[in-house]
Length: 320
Image (cartoon, rainbow, N blue to C red; front, side, top):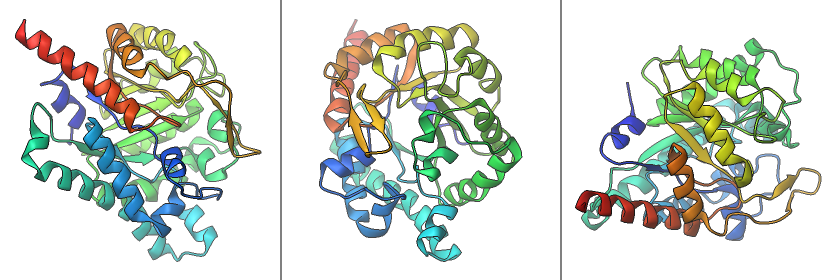
């Protein structure tokens, strides 16, 4: 079974994830005003995705999360792609990330005090396909079996493409987490991290208690880490406390900038709360998080701030 998180954590105190992909594509001039969102760029500008993966590795990330968050068979086929073309596009997301990783690792100067980075295939929620902000509400009505059917073929394609693990991320509702956890049983050599979106310091987006979600999902033997992503930084400390009370699995956190996404206008609104990402990440580490990165509106510079602080602290501890 592929276990990249535990492999790195056996040698280093922290796994550093990458930051945002879609909003970083927009920051670099890509037009994502489209139901496919970042998956549109897989079809139009794959070289830009490659460059962003490479920039995150250079910033210190141990992981590239693939551009498959909003890439689905249903979404691509709605756009007019054949089934085979949709399959190829999904697998291209893994190939791009692997190429960036291999090119980065080929330079021996990049290997100093670093673990070999890995590729996590993003499994975004059903709400991402709907492209209406549902991943922050979870107000869709598919049952557990229907959600398994929606995710199954995409998960298989990404695994077959050679992803090191899965990132089942931005999950707004417990029923979808259950569906994804059951699907993992069909791919027994694959591990995944599970991360939910939160509405506050107690509840995930649909309203279930985060503690209940962690208690139910974390015991699955293929769940390598569990936590929160694309939620406001102000919620993270309390949610780490909640998770640590009910699981010994590594806690993963990668919040967004603190702004709120308005699906009606396709704009982020509110106040940025990630200006001190290095100190914030250190505080989350001290509380018990062991897998830390950034989500929407974070950049390679945010990941660099985490990496510089974490690796400086690691060197000091070794010296002492």
